[in-house]
Image (cartoon, rainbow, N blue to C red; front, side):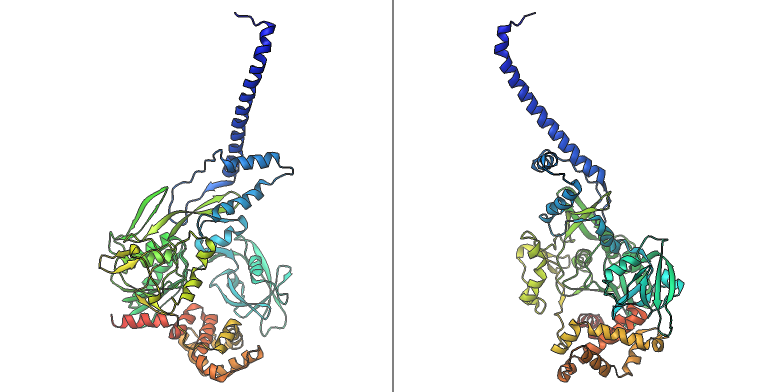
Length: 556
């Protein structure tokens, strides 16, 4: 064994100290990185769980933090900042910032907003089962859900809710969303409401047990004539396919051979609902849509042999607010030369989101793939210039004249595709209709614009319904209600009402807009009495796009 002499220590001590320092730095960095990874991993793993996608892809999602600038910065802040730092607040601030610069549809959903985001897709919520309107600063019941909690205890259309539990809600200018929040709650819990009823001197107290309330996405279905059926879908939710099949079977039983599927204003939702409906119109083995992303291999959706509408003549109505799942359905029909698309160019959303839910109730919806129509076109419009420009696209289309003239829309030849039947279609920004219908400007006047913008048409209709409810109570269809209103002096009543609200009559302009105003009034009254089955058959007469569809089918 070699013995170090004291003199040799003078030589080795500096070297040993240097080695120790290097080892210390390396270990420090190692433990820092491990600690950062532990912090990040614990926060993510403790607060998150993977939730199967509501929007298409179903593969699991793994987050593996790396010792990069973000992790290092977080570690530095958490350990060295002068004051205590809330990791929760950092999460709430940083996650939205990360997603903001990806694409317009990748979003962070705070826990307090999660229920509001998901209720429309799930198809139900828990509440008391009423539709209400704020009328003269009071909560006026428009309708009750059949066999729902409110109807069961005896609440009736026309009732006013003046208090919820211990809170007065009438005459206090309370926002309607706050009232909704008070009436909603967990299934099985109770809420007390105080009702003022027309013809009854004293308020009536009710205790209502909350229950699951369905949210319908098929707004209405009815026969336009002996052969043409009409189905309006407002969104694609978990219950949409079942609702659609029920509506289609009803109409088939009434003799439907031609169908108008109205997707105008439908912003999308669950992709599976759209592909299931598309399946009803296509022959077995036809491609409906495919999705593909950087970490998501191509996934094809094909039609099966179970379609019940394969022989029905089809028209789909679209407009600039038809998006996502609506475009999947329309694109599948167009690319398979199945049916006719009528209306205006759709929104242009071709991205698939996947949802990851955290245990605190918040969630991330992340774009993981794009969808492509059967010919291979992506209808996603550009988004690389930022969210603001992306969301201003509709306004730019309007200013460019696209809502009035089809030839104002131009696509690059690189986005041109051909269907099996030889039809030219384009990708890169929505689904172009086969028959373009401009925005209907007939009946417009300054008087109409004023009463419409002030909400006077709807408000008058509600007041009229209130005053004549007993006389219309036994009417079961739109024609009965329309005929009854036609026998009344409703035009003079409306002009007087609008005048009382500060809109003085201009009889020349009223004459120009009379049909539009009075048809809307009748449609709203019918909706107040018998819901959408009253509204849509009446409004049909001034719905120019629908009339084009009906005329097109009349020669088929």
